[in-house]
Length: 184
Image 1 (spheres, rainbow, N blue to C red):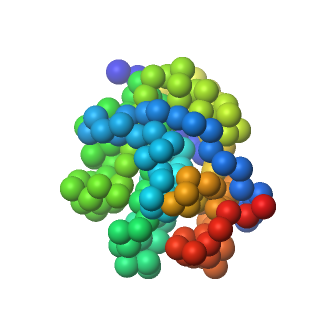
Image 2: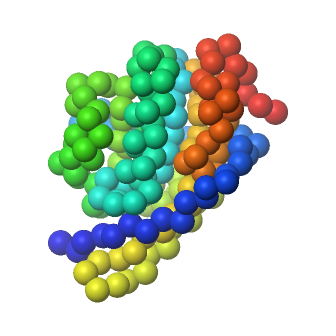
Image 3: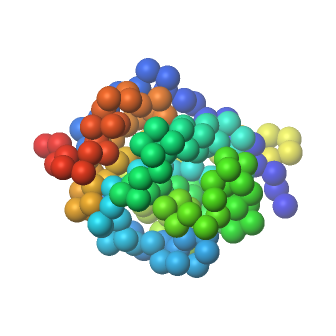
């Protein structure tokens, strides 16, 4: 199996962007449960494109999300959706290992890791402006991808969008408020 090495350009001084609603999608969670656009309704969901074998930025965003989860008290009103940018590589075993590395309880159904057919994932990434660059190197590929974090409200509308994993805490906490309405 080809080893993948992640080297992602991280925007340290990123900004909150004008939020755009996510396109419709139908993927599958690592445990086989369907995850669709409609799945996001009813709870606030933080969505990030990532992959389980990444060794740099993706583990960092998962760490930051677990820290955020602790800050907000592991709220039942917030869930976390990772969307794989490596649909052929992110197996359930790899995903569970990624969650274990971050001490995410495998039974906690708020933590989702969506996968799907490569063409559907690629279409979703294209539609959301996520660019992926693969550079072949000895032992695998260097994979770089656009950094993006979306906060989707219980109504399925995007409340906030960040181009960094180092979001402004006040803006993130504001986007997570139950009474918050979408910007725009």
